[in-house]
Length: 305
Image (cartoon, rainbow, N blue to C red; front, side, top):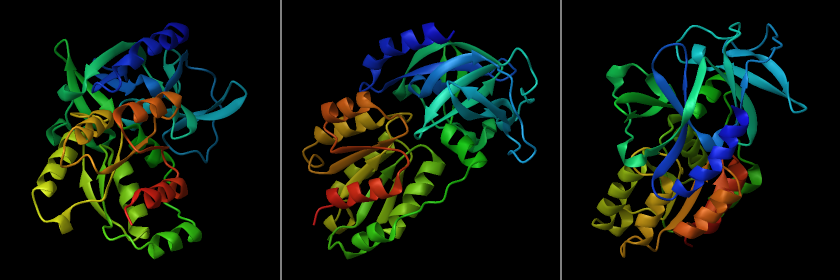
């Protein structure tokens, strides 16, 4: 599965920037299909032999040697409320690179790669019972696809505090910016919480949107209102339902009332490809998640004096 998967990923890169995303579909023990962005996926393997320590988190099935590095393996089935897969020989392992770290996720079966129209993705109704670990749903050939919020799953296993160095914090508080409001656009509750916490430490006010469509609506509403209530900077995730960060940036640049805004794209999908797309859609900066000092410094540079 690994080689064909990696060969196929390159075919789907042309979809980025057009509000379409390539998803690797998998299952966790039942017919329900789940998805994860293929750009987070390094490889798909059969479940290897795992080493386990009693002190590990309940959702960590163990660790194993992956190309010379010891990486943790999260039982994604258990995290999503399904029977654990740690001892199931037929289970598969999805190796991912996420927020500059490598980890594995146990799933029962891997299906295929598909491309999804971002406009057809929406936040799941609470009645479906997914909770915060699914941040979008869509339908493919009539079947429901649930997109896993990997950030939330990892945060439940390894919560990380938002630490800002004293130098950067002092620089933020000393900067004489007139407008200290930032629009935060991210579909992940964990990511939004981290950003709001970071900006609070920088004495910045956050306005929140859960996807690009909501962010654009907020910007249009602000543009029609008093100047004092507008934002000075947009900090947006890239992969989001309804409208992704690339499409949001392009919409801002094509709007005469909004094109002056600075846009910083902030994503777990790091790499040269994203940097090229940032330039193509007209964003001002790209920062890989989550590096508080680097992000804070970039925000300070982009805020108008």
